[in-house]
Image (cartoon, rainbow, N blue to C red; front, side):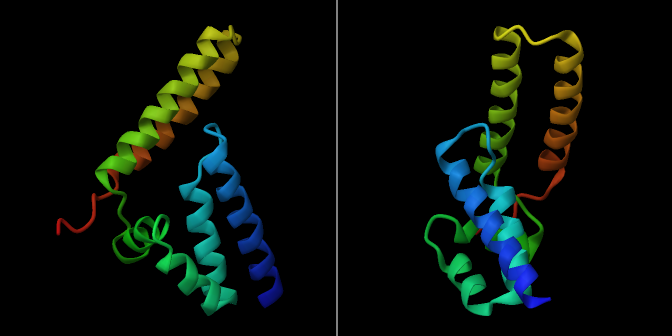
Amino acid sequence: MRWIWLTLGGVFLGLGLVGVLLPVLPTTPFLLLAAGCFAKSSPRLHRWLLAHPVFGPSIRNWEENGAISRPAKRLAVGSMVAVVAVSVLLGLSWKALLVQTVLIAVGSAFVLTRPDGPSG
C-alpha cells in the first residue's frame, strides 16, 4: 500500500509543480494532496514539503489549522473569477458557463469559509 501512496504523492506533486507554470491548474490543492500522500508513505518527502520555503507555510497552515491565509484566499478566488471572465470572452456556451460558474462558486465558498490561520 505504501507504494500506492508514494506514487499518488509523486503524481500530485508533479501536477502542483505544473500548476506553478499554468495559471489554469491550481497548485496548492495538489500540493496538499501530495503532502497527505507522503505523510502516509514517506516521512522524508513529507518533511521536505513542510520545510519548503515557498510551499511549506501553506501546507503547514492547512495541516495544523485547516486554514488558508487571506492572501491565498484572494489569489484563489481572483483566479477563479479570471477563469470565468476568460471563458465569457472566449464565447463558451451558456450551459458551459453555468456549470463552470456553479462549480467555481462552490469552490470559492469552500475557500472563503476556511479560517485564516494563526495571526502571528
